[in-house]
Length: 376
Image 1 (cartoon, rainbow, N blue to C red):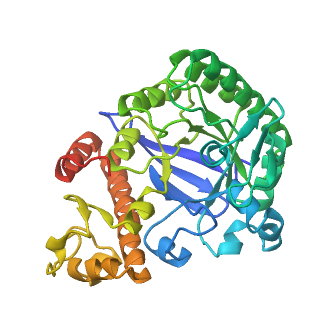
Image 2 (cartoon, one colour):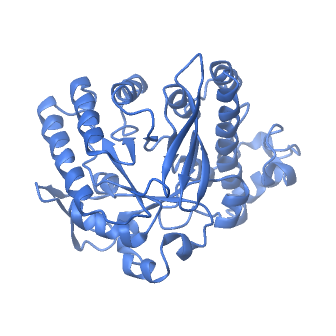
């Protein structure tokens, strides 16, 4: 990787926690960390336009290798000039390798040293993914950051299973790294190892020896208790370099985001804010709101008085409830705008708190106001 094209610049570490403020330099701009990254699986964040995302302060967003391989195909995206031009997003992008989708969508899959054989969730067609084929797809998609192909380990799993899988993931990481040739695209390794301290640390150490451009912590947010997730983060971070970005995969609830930042995480992503918005659940500074509730039928106040997003500036709870009850697409858009804006604003405020060495106070204040429904 050309260091002039992509690199991480650590600017400040909070004196009272492990929280870090930094700058992620990419071919499509420089972005502040820690950051929350909205997920645009099919080269679209559901119901939101790329222009809206960019205007609300979104930095890096995600697209998914598995889904784009199926539709429209990486060759079409490449002909369009890469995923950014294809979807007209002005900022930086990251493509996941599809390992989690193989784990979550493929009911029957065969894992071997060569790769994974599974069936398409769309039509049942047989698909084979190897580290080399995934890397070929990701390079054609052309995002600023590509992820290594790994096995997303289920929780719980036996030590023997996790050990074998982690060692195979390391071999896959090397194979993918060996065929990655795009100089304008960073490549991240993914730390696996389940809840086993020695395996997590070993995996992190071996990936660091391969000198990836950044490192992700995978195998979390798949049903394990919170304390287990937090241990997984600690085990990995202990062995990761301070001068490379750290990405915690698949977290989007307020407590996971803030505690991840406290532990030294720089990047996080999740479909949660848009997914729960489409089902009427909103994250606000004073806790979770279910807009379906009858009590909002005549509530002509903003969704969140402390939020300055487009939705909160212009519409009331009563109107949002009306749109949701009537199953209007505009309502789903407005609710999604709010949830994504909320998490982007929280991480923006977290960055300011880190620079002023008051992140712990900020975290506790936010979570206290948010109330008992911390999970969302």
